[in-house]
Amino acid sequence: MAEVNLRKVAIVGCGFVGSASAFALMQSGLFSEMVLIDVDHERAEGEALDIGHGMPLAKPMQIYAGDYDDAQDAAIIVVTAGANQKPGETRLDLVKKNVAIFKSIMPEFAKRDCKGIMLVVANPVDILTYAATKLSGMPTKRVIGSGTVLDTARLKYQLSEHLCVDSRSIHTFIIGEHGDSEFATWSSTNVSGVPLHDFCEMRGHHDHEDAMLRIEAEVRNSAYEIIKRKHATYYGIAMAVKRICEAIIRDEKSVLAVSSLMADVYGIEDVALSMPAIVGKDGIEDLIPVRLNAEEQRKLRESACVLKGVINDVL
Image (tube, rainbow, N blue to C red; front, side, top):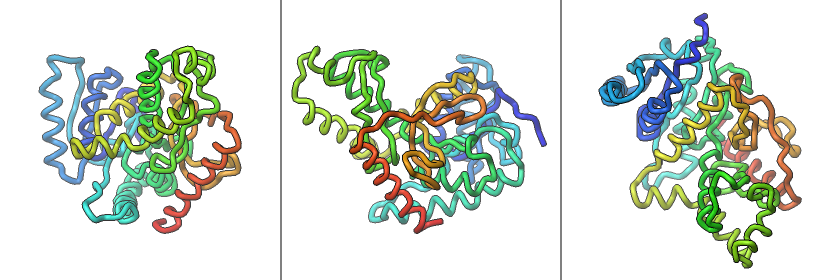
C-alpha cells in the first residue's frame, strides 16, 4: 500500500465543479501534484493541459490526467462525479442515477485501501456522503461531504450585506440537509460575541422576524437563482472545496459545517447531514454540539427524516 502523499490531491469528475475546484486548488498552493480522473479521459487530459499551461504564471505543480491507481496515495480525494438534473427529471431520479455512479466508483477506492481523506462534493451531497461511507470501506471520520459549508458562507454574505459588517465577524451556521430542509442556527448567531438581534438594533434594523425569514429564503434559493441565470453553480463550491482542503492539509482544526455520518446527534443516527465539526489532518475529529433551541432541534430531526426517506428509496 502506497504511503499518503500530503502534497497530492485527486479530483474525480471533471465537469464544471471538478474543473473549477481543480483551478482553485492549483491557485491555493496547498499541493504540488494533482491528478484528474474522469470517465471521459480526454476531458480530464484537456483540463489538465489547460490549467497546466498556466504553471509558469503560478506556483510549480504537476497536473495530469490519470486513473484510480493514481489516486491511491492522494492526501485528499475530491469526488465531484455525478449527473446533472435534466428538465422533467425528479430529484429522486437524479439521486438514483448518482448513487448508481457511486456504486461503480467507490469499490475502486475500497480495493485500493486508500488512506487519505475523501471529500464528497457531488449532489445530493448528503445522500452521496452516506453512500460513500458505506461503499468505500473508509472510516467514517475520513469521509466528508462539502455539506453546508457554502450555504453557511452564503448566509454570512447575506448578513454582512444586511448589517454592513465584515462577513468574517459573523458566527453562524446553516445545518441539516444541503437542500430544501436546511436551516440557519439563528438562536446562536452572533457578531463577534454580540447576539444577532442586539447587533441588528445597533445597526438600525428592528424587524427581526421578517428579515430572518427573507435572508434564510435567499440563502436556500441561492443555487436556484444562479442556475436560472447561468445554468450551473461552480465558483462558490470550488472555494468551499479549497477551504475544506486547507483545514485538512494544514491541520487547522477549523470548525466547518461539513456533512458526515451522524451517531446519536440530537437523537439522529445512520444518516449523513451537516453539523459543525472540527476538521483537521485526520478528517473529522469531533462534531460540535452547537446550541439549538426546541424549534431548531425539530427542524434538524425533520431534515434527517427527509434524508432517511431518500436513503431508504435508493440504498
